[in-house]
Each structure stands twice: as C-alpha cells, then as structure tokens.
Amino acid sequence: MAKFIFVTGGVTSSLGKGILAASLGKLLQTRGLKVTIQKFDPYINVDPGTMNPYEHGECYVTEDGAETDLDLGHYERFLGVHTSQANNVTTGKIYQEVINRERRGDYLGKTVQVIPHITDEIKRRMLLLGNSDQYDIILTEIGGTVGDIESLPFIEAIRQLKWQLPKEDYLVIHLTLVPYLASAKELKTKPTQHSVKELQSYGVNPHIIVCRTEHPLGNDRKKKIAEFCNVDYNSVIESLDAETIYDVPLNLKKEKLDEIVLEKFGYTNLPDTNLIEWNAFLQRYKFPKKEINIGLIGKYVELKDAYISIYESFIHAGAKNECKVNVIPLSSEEINKNNIQEKLAHFDGIFVAPGFGQRGIDGKILTIQYAREKNIPFFGVCLGMQVAVIEFAKNVLNLEDANSTEMKQHCKNPVIDLMQEQKTIVNMGGTMRLGAYTCHIKENTLAHQIYGATHISERHRHRYEFNSNYLQQFIDNGMVASGINPDSNLVEIMELPSHKFFIGVQFHPELKSTILQPHPLFSAFVKACLS
Image 1 (spheres, helix red, strand yellow):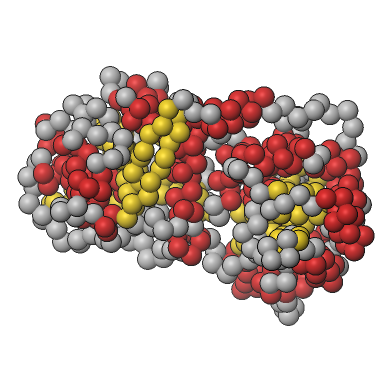
Image 2 (tube, helix red, strand yellow):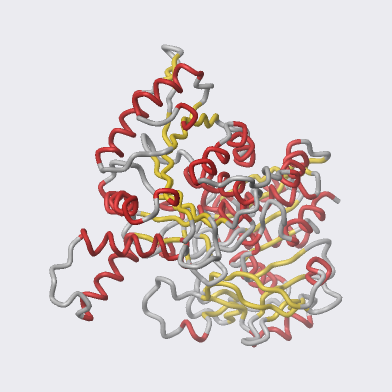
C-alpha cells in the first residue's frame, strides 16, 4: 500500500492547493519516489465537461479521455507523468455510483445514507490508486474550503481513513491564509486558527500547516500557530507569494517541507532533491534574451484559467527558445474589418484558441485571413483549425456559404461537419471524441519537420471534423492535410506550405506540454515568431 497525503484548504478558496500538491509531489519525485496526485471536487457535476469555462476554467483532458479539473494539468506539467480517470473524482461521480448500486439492489434493501455508503465510496476511490506497487506516495487534494457543506463527506472520509490506514502511511496537510492588514501593518493568524479549529471539529487534525502569506511569518507567529493549532513548530510552513508558480517547489524546499514529510513517513537514506533541470528551466524563463508578442484570439479571454494550459505551454516554449513570450488576449468579438489592422498589427504571431459555438466566429475568420495574407505566423487549435478551414474555403476556394454545421446547420458547403458517430448522441456529458488518438504525419511537411516523426499521439476534445469530401479542393489550392488519423481518416493537421508558418491542428497539444518537455508545436511557433 502506498502512503497517502491529504491536502485540505481553509480561510478562502484559490489559495493554491493544486500548486502546493504539485510542488510537494515534484520534490518527493526528485528524491526517487513514485508519486501521483488525485483531485476530489465537491460539485455535483459528474465532470467539468459540460461546464462553461467562466464557471470552472479550462476542462483538462487526460490520455484515457477523462474530462477533469484544470489542477490535473498542473499535476502533469510539474510531475511529467500522465493522470487518468481515477485521478479526478467529483461528488457527482460518487452519488452516481451509489445510486446505480442501489438500483441494482446491491445494498440488500438497506437505507442508503451519506454515512456509510457515500463515505465508503469516497474512501474506495481515494485508495484506488494505492492498491498496487505503481506508486510510493499518493497526494489527494480536496477541493473547496473546510467548512463548506459540500466538502463534509470528503472530510469525514479522511477522518475515517485515519483509523483504517497504518499511522505511518497517513498524513494531512492544511493550507491556510495569513492575511496582512495594511492599516495595522500586521499579519493576522486568527483566520488560520479558526480554520484549523473547524477542521479539528470534524475529527481531523492536520500534521502540517502551510501558511500562504504576503510577508514573512517570523518565529513568533510560527510558534503561535503551532501552539494554538496543536502541531509541531517545524510543521508550520511559510508559503510566501511567489514570482511564478514554478518558484513554489524551490520555496517549499527552503522550508524543508519534503524533509518533514519524509520524516513523518519514516523514510530514511533517500537521495536529496535533484532540481538541476528545474533550475535550468527557471534560469531560461527569468532571463530571456529576446521578446515577442503573440495575440491569443478567443472568446473566454477575460478569464485566464479558461486557457491556462495554453498560457503555460507558451511559457515552456518561450523558455526553450530563451524568449519572453507576451501572450496578449484579445476577444474575437472586438475584431471587425474597420479595426483589424489596429488590433493585430503589433503581434509577432497569431494564435486562435479552441472553443465552442457561434459567438466571435466572424472575428476569428477575419483574424486568420489577416494572418494568411500578411504572412504572419499562425497557429490554430481545434476550433482554431476549423475556422482556418472555413476562412480558406470562403476566400480562396470561393465556396458560397462555406461554414461549419456547428455554426450554421444547413449551410451550402459544410467544410466542417459533425462527426458521423456523434449524430445519434443525445447526452452531452463525456460523449465527445476524447483522449489520445494516433496521427500519421506526411513526410516533407511542416508538421513532419516539427515533430521529427511520422506517427504521433495527441489528445482530443471535439464533435466536429474536417469534411473530407472537400479535401481535394483544398489540396488543389495549396492547403495540405499533413496529419491524418490512420483508423478513421480524420484530418488532424492542416497547413499552408507557401506561408511562413501556418498550421492548424484538430487536437489539443497544450495538454501534453510540460516544464521539462515543451510541446514541439508551441516551440516551433515561438521560433517562427522570433524570425
């Protein structure tokens, strides 16, 4: 059985439990331990797949096709290992499973209750990844804030596991906020005391308290928190606001968080953390030699979390090219024929983001036409590729009423159409083309030059596809289908060889970019923008 670390949060949401878990996981991983992280979300949606990005941010997709919380993206980017369906569990999944069992009669006529039936299912899911020798340590992040009604069954499950797991295999870390009152020029520990008291009232005593703060805590405040929250002095960890999330592992290392965890678990004689490659990445990221501006054209630009994997992929690619990449979000709804020069002229490259629905499509079409005609490096992902196809059909092939059936169901020339297997689907949740699929890349193409391979695997999340009935017309007019799925003949990559850099992909490469392995498409795009 693996050892388990449970990460809870108090005082306020958005403190960074996911970054804390990912950073600690990285420190333990570099000591030679096999680590994974799982997220338990308290909302009743089965997954975030049907949620608006403004509600939940980006929907992250795993290799096996799970639509998950965006924190799983942080886990993969920090650890460089794949997560799966088992790594993200919601209240919706828990209740769905319990209700299905009740309908089958599995409970033999008993009254089904939150305790023990819901909590038993939560515990089963929490322990699932530990029932093999695949991992040494499993970090479990509990979404929400201690005190929230919806989080109570998860906290109760953690309390029960204290008595079911060996003492040396069980650890609770509580992340809280120590706010700074500018008028009093003082840090206040009372919110942390109340947060821990709330957690203890549910029968869970944290072993380690991590304090998010704008200013150093100092020894006196650490002692105060330790005394009033009933933890060891050295188990009160200061987590100062960092310049970048990639500094957090180094900051926690200075606070010896990994050493404290290993000591509590009884580990001895493990190698020290090896952060040489991590520090090299940070050096390139913080001290770039060049700088470029890339326009991110989308419909959810007001919320950075809606495109978080894209932003992070540009950070990775920028560091690889020793370049500062300024990603400037621009709503496609603001772009029209009268202002397009003013809006786009200062960009070194144009990236058209994924999305769904009609809103903002006209601005995206104008943007791609501008990039194509002005020979500005262009990169489109998912809907970004589909709109590039629509623009080419309208302005180069001169196809009347060329469109996607997602935007106009009965258009005359549906160059983008609903995938055949999607046409009988009624339920929207979890029914898109999801997860990793293979792609065959044609030689002597831009895609082949970028990947250096003829067979790749990338993750998908879409219902609509390029209509292959129009493929020959595109080829005859200079647009190449350089990547095709060998099983379904789905067009995965479209590019313009006559252009400086013009490529669109049906899949989501941003989901596979990590700190130490930037995605080649993003790296190549940044390099093209530099030239």
